[in-house]
Amino acid sequence: MLATDEDIIRDLLHRYTEHVHPTASIATEVVARQRRRDRRRVVSLAAAGAAVGTAAGVIAVVPGHSSPAPGGRPPEIRLTADQRVLYHLSSAAARQQQGQGRYAVMSTEGTDVKDTSVIDSRTGNMWSYQEGSHGNPSGKSFTRRYSPTTAQFAAMPTGRAALRAALITQWKSATKPAPDPIRRKGPHPVQIPVTTSDNDMVFQQASYTLWNPLVSPALRSALYKVLAAVPGVTVNPSARDSTGRSAVEISRTDNSGFPGGKSDKITYATYENPATGATLESTITYPPGSDVVTPQDPDGSHTVVDTTVYLSTAWANSVPADPYGG
Amino acid sequence: MDRRQTRAFEQFCAESGAELLRIATLLAPDPHTAEDVYQETLQRLAARWSRVDNPKAFCRRVMHNIVVDHTRARARRPELRLVDTGETSDPRSADPHHSVELWPSLRAALDSLTVQQRTVLVLRYFDDRSESEVAGLLGISVGTVKSTASRAIAHLRRFPGLAAIFTTTDSMV
Image 1 (cartoon, chains in turn cyan, orange):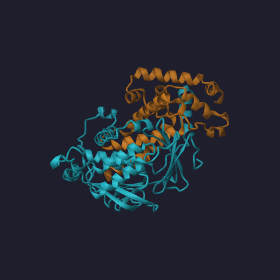
Image 2: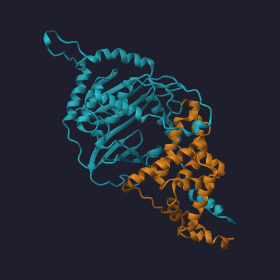
Image 3: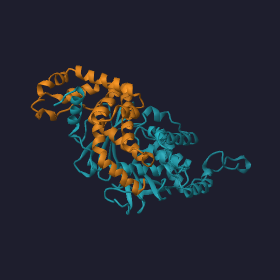
Image 4: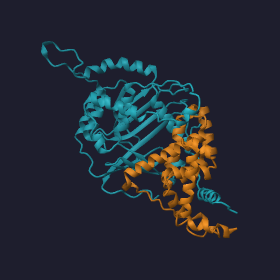
């Protein structure tokens, strides 16, 4: 017997949701994502020290920082082999045309998951349709995220110093912790302070930006020049992505860890099309014993490579249907 | 997160995940948004796991905040609501007392409430939180919880697709 309005509502709400069940793997996925975020926020003193040492060599390519040449000649700019490759990549990117159409439709493939994302270039809304999620080849899911708009990317500076500063600002803005209302109610716990060097921020933010098809050719070109001046960056001009496509591999290994955890050498890499400067693949490699757990490696005892392959990008003026029929 | 924290977090998700997703389903305007709210809530919890002393309360407050954010974003960009929110199944239709298409009406009725009314309703009558607990979670007074719940119930009673449920209850006994 449902005696009161409250009882009726209680009954309705419970019966309405009794068929709702979360996927079992959600906690593992959240933890894996959190570990990646933790690692990106942490810098080791060793990496910072190495960066300072390397910066002296890089500064020679920055106009105005070199010693004046005798006889009034302009200062000589010497590029390393890695920097030359990145400058070639920068030139290739600058020659490309911006995609035409309101919606960018991007197909990617992860370890087990196929993903087609639709990005609205005007609003930044991003709809991602996945197939093969939660370890089930036929499993389908849908997520919504947000990207900077074409206009926002276009408003970013393309000068090297200004872009570097903008990337640092973006990184700090994106990783600023949200207010924690619960924290006010209890005693403040002791926290291990976390710092990240400017070079870590620049590399991470630049590599997070490069994959986005809304990035203009001018900005993409500038990003490669900024990366060329980040200490610790390694470039392999004759690499191949996991599908066999020729690529320029740009990678950087840091010695990150996370509060309460141990330090690990994590390698972040992005593979770029040498002819166009478009991103073909990005990877994060965690070494054995890095405390990174996955459903396949619950003890974190193996090397884990988190891979995203960018298969294609097309442009449309209307929202395409779910490609997986979900 | 270290391994000990990971295990504790995963245990919490195993024990409370269904309950949290159901609350998200009731708070969000559609199932896709509910999934997003649920995942985002767990992500924020994971980020603060070592500092949160009451994960359940944290999740409820965070879910409310995320739904508020979603609602504001949608209000700014109403034309972008492209996700189909229609329900195709009516689990209650098997009930001889409720053969009507009830769920679309309930969904529409919940959508017509304000975010605060909806959250108070869900926390009070689905989550079985006391008025003082709801007040603490939402940062409002107990009096506001009472009046908000009362107005929400009155609204549902008057809602076209649900009015019959309330008025025919006595005949079901």
